[in-house]
Length: 398
Image 1 (tube, rainbow, N blue to C red):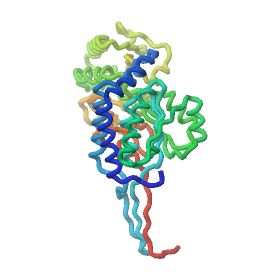
Image 2: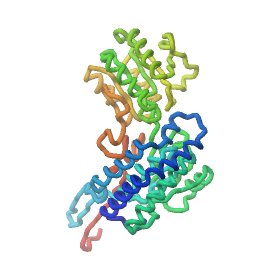
Image 3: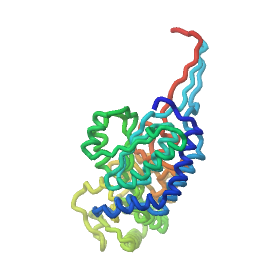
Image 4: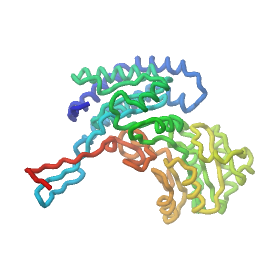
């Protein structure tokens, strides 16, 4: 869109949208019920992301209310310089322009990520998965009502009801200008977008997160963190997939047996390397490429390492660049781990489940970026902007 909406206009649309979601709750649930009943897959994570209930609707409303309360991310002064010839140069934040969000199965993304992109002054193109089509179309209808109520063109929010072939064609030869693409979904979706897109893509969402249990770990804490990170929400990209245990850990055998019991209690399938598959109820894996896998399922891999350096090396080789944890009471060891591990978020003694825009104090999140360009980690409202130079002169030439 050529003309930027004012802060007041953007907030008014978001307020209308929050009211519409509340008043149209039953219609949203009805549309989602059709999607859920039509879903025939066996992917637990996909089903969990697809299903909308009252709690998710409340989350949508709260996310919009938080966005309204947030300061305007546009026009923030980043740099100010006055040249010796009198030229005044100011660098400010500015919208990207048009942001395309491609996502799988999550109707709440249509509200929350769409809201972030809109509040930051961008036109939004939404391309959801076929499994959530009815839910998404209903929510986009509400976006259009919210825009119309405020006398703003409905072109600010557009839904691309494309199949895979049509989506590929659009990525390769866009029929309108697209300035940034944010894919939210599994590795196959991200790879598909990266392969075909002709504009910048922010890679997000791949987890494959690790916990390393150090020789100076509090073992009760380790058990609590591992179970929470693995079992509290298996469909989340911040869920845990791999645990590395130092072979020199005091009480290692008893700790591993207790961990196995707790994982089984949570119905988690346990796989192990040569060392840890010796334990009862731990199956040996046949292919070492499993270390690269993000599970999004009740499955976990346990592995043994002989040192901190080996743990760091393994995480940097196989991890998704998302989140990694060390459980240790040694501050120096923790700092070494956190400085050396190549992940967007590194933790000492806390669950990977905190890698989330809301938990990081950012409000809602567009995505969790594992890229190193532009922004890394949870992407909040303040990150979905680029910058622009404003140069004021009175006839200077060079």
